[in-house]
Amino acid sequence: MRRFRIIIRSLIALILFGVLHYTLPQHDVVRVVNTYQERQDLDDWTRIFWSKPDDQSAGLINRDVQFVQTVKKKTYLLGFIRTDAEEVMVYRNEDTGWSWPFYFKFDTASLQTEVDDLRSTAEEPKWAVITHYGWRNELISVFPNAVGIRPVAGPDVTIIPWFNIAFFLFLAVAVGFARALWVQFRQRSIDPALEDASEAWDAVDARADEAKGRVSRWLGTWRKKK
Amino acid sequence: MGFLRLIIFGFIGLSIIYVLVSLYSRSVRLEKLEEQWAEEHPNGNESDREAWLREGMEDYQKSFRPKLILLVYVVPALLVLLSIILIN
Image (cartoon, rainbow over all chains, first blue to last red; front, side, top):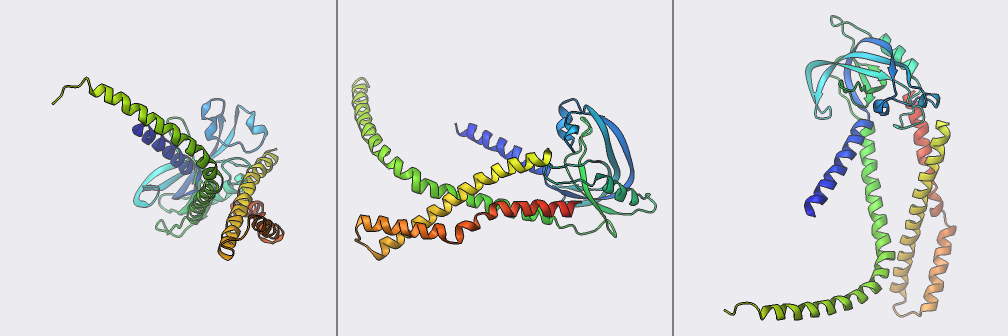
């Protein structure tokens, strides 16, 4: 029973972590190499990793998506450990519209223009910080969605994730409040009701204990005397 | 349509929060009033207590504090507006 509870709890924690890791914004230091547009098929289960920019897009089985090809500075541990090594990263650039995740991004075309403006070569790099959410998976062709880009002087820029700080502060407050609400509800509404029930239960329990005592005493008469 | 869906479901979700928060706030106020009564009238009679509590809760309903809970609707709407401005 205890092991079962541990498994369920870690599963919930894992799912929660996954959802937050997918949804919350992250920042990458990148150099834009190129942009392109490609028709994507949307009629299998990987549809969940593409946006629904507007209502008609929900019914389409394929549509053109804009992409941003970059070389980015490698990071580890949710971006906290940054290295000088480089890797390639391809982002998609899609509106999120009014639906989940709630970025309310409508400026795909403008963002694509900004990105194009920042294109550079390895010899003469122009570094930029790209804000994105989502995951990259080469096996099933999943791309993170870029939501913003800003040019920076060099690759060692300090990035403070203001939104995530505020989000987790808010989450802590919300959890604390939900707890207070539950405690208040239990004290004022459930406990008084339970008190009556528990008195009745105690009587039943006492009678059961008595019966059990009689049975075990009888069993004891069959044991070997020492 | 997407906008409408967001508004409808957002309104439902926020209404649930609104109801929960106002129930909580009322319950906390009632508890405080009960404690105050117990302190000031260690052996007051029951019907006086009931009347006093009812009056206290009516004052609370009329006061500004319960109206502050309407911020539950206002703040998320402002946040949505802010993020539309910041992202685009």
